[in-house]
Length: 165
Ligand code: ZN
Image (cartoon, rainbow, N blue to C red; front, side):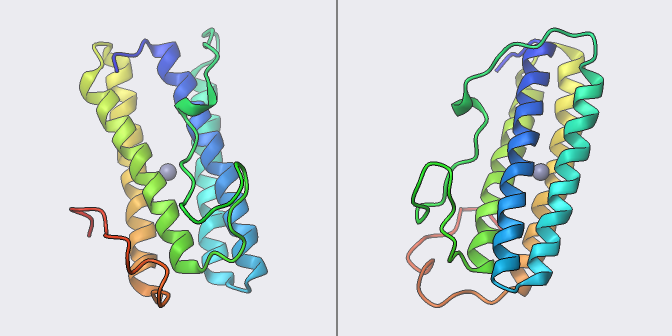
């Protein structure tokens, strides 16, 4: 992925916007489940994604950005989610955290790989910075996962990502 700066900025803005939307849904869902602690975590993630989004928009001032197709930045749905947009509203905290972590890892991989493959020094620099930020998100989610009881059946058959902590 040897992106130009405008291409990269457009992807990053879309990705952070998407993350904020999904975290908002997850936060509302956890609130409906009366899981205020996990809801608060997701609200923090909404805030971080929005701050990041806004700072990238700021960085993009004066740059004409390309239009993207949605498959280029959208979160993948968990296997148990029904519709295109909707989460399974019965998603428990553990599954919600795991799902969020998977998508954060995806964002991390994305930024890291752009950072590695780009020939534009500014793209490289920004991608490295964003990857470091995603690493923090992944770690925050992993901390919570470690403290959250695993539901009985749902995920037992689902092998953990190799190399995950
Ligand atoms: Zn993130």
